[in-house]
Image 1 (cartoon, rainbow, N blue to C red):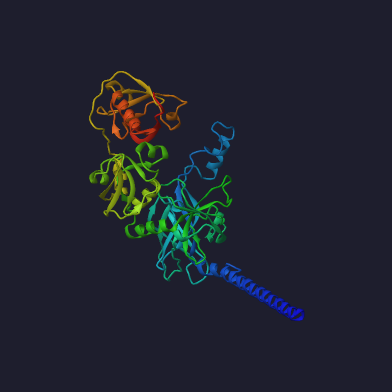
Image 2: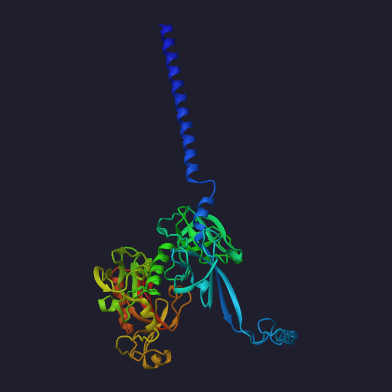
Length: 499
């Protein structure tokens, strides 16, 4: 019996050993396979991709005629003992008032075989002559003169056109929304005037905003320097997912923080420039601001979000029935998260299109159909527009201190002193406690409160009523509509336990 037991034990041990060997063999095979797949996914060199797409990248040289100096100003300080010396030097060399040419360098890329080229607006702005230098090879011309088709200063994009006797190599735009943080990218261009150059890196961040209303930048650590402006940012499929536009640097050189305008913004601009020679952005006709947590609480909203309408001047929104105090939660079927997203979405919508705008008003949801106007037309007319308040007249002479503010009703004398319209109504802030929440939120003497709790106020008693109504409703904050220099904004102030 013992001998039989030993045989069974040895047999089991052999089976376990065999199983372990097989398992190790499988793991080894999987490891080798993973290495092979990784090698296939990440090529040893980017040279094949660069060879394929580089002929579409161009250097751009601009020439601008500028007036000559009338003296040594800007070279030496006025009154300097060297002033006469430099003046004589200029006269001897015939400079004086003689006009001279100033040159600048940038980059761009060809998007069609018939010669359309994309670059930055700031690269060619004000230029008298634009010369396109092509990457050597593939039978492309060495240099061609370009004409400006159209520009857009809001996204810093320009569309150029050259006439060539041959079909030009070109590249296509990719979908920038599919780019992920960590994806490999290639930047090409003419950095520091050194000629064609390639740098590689990754997508460092998405949806960056610098200063414009329509900003949607891809941040990358691929080296971008002066002269790279207008050049393409490629994904690993050789598609343009961005236009290299700006760098963030304390020295002026690359420190690994570069910004490329996302291709999904650029393509819409380029399509309009190509068709119309200008942009045609949708216009809703409202002034908006983000909804903060305290504003949401003061308005009885479940959470912060959407875009709060602070004013509705004459335009599409007013004609459709949108009101100040409405919170836009959806535009044309897309949820509105904040003002930045709404501005971009409206601008990208076709002029003349009728869209559904969903708003929260008085605690209820309301859908309003609005036919969009054109932003460019509104901006041209804005300088001549005049805004007026609802009629009203208040003569209360007293003032009150509340919520960290000293307020007083408007009088004819105050309207005159403050340069307000004769029909302006509201409560004038004459003083702000610098230790108060109101001061922290930017309220200052001279601001005009026109609404409280989303209702107009023209007297101290009306403001008292609004405060009591908010407290009775269990709200911790009161929403004020405040104007400064005619510009409105909402501010929510904590009510506390009393005044």
